[in-house]
Length: 154
Image 1: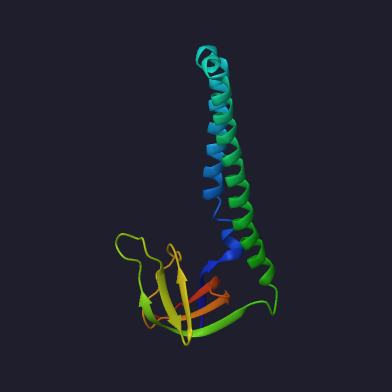
Image 2 (image 1 turned 180 degrees about the vertical axis):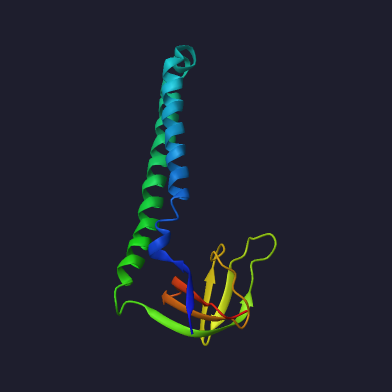
């Protein structure tokens, strides 16, 4: 059977940058708050210790958040890319069963099974999958690193 690639982690790149980027934005806001407070002398001078500690606390929390969020998510991505080497992944080929599509609200992950292997993923795969469709799934643990769909199946 001929398969068409619907998703490949090596083509998609590091897609989870939004969470650490939001944290970095929060850090930037902490810096801007500290600069703004420092330049406005009257409010800064009335409570200098409190304002200094508040600005430093906001900055410290946001920097720790940014660092931890980025390192945890990026570490998982690098691990998946390293495991793509031969022998580090599993592959299953068959038809989709037990498909639970993304509901209208989009808050719950989609899931499906191929033989005894079940997969959950958030967001679309870029190409819809249907019950009974022929697929080939390359995975590490429960994470799909490549999804190929049968070109002739409906």
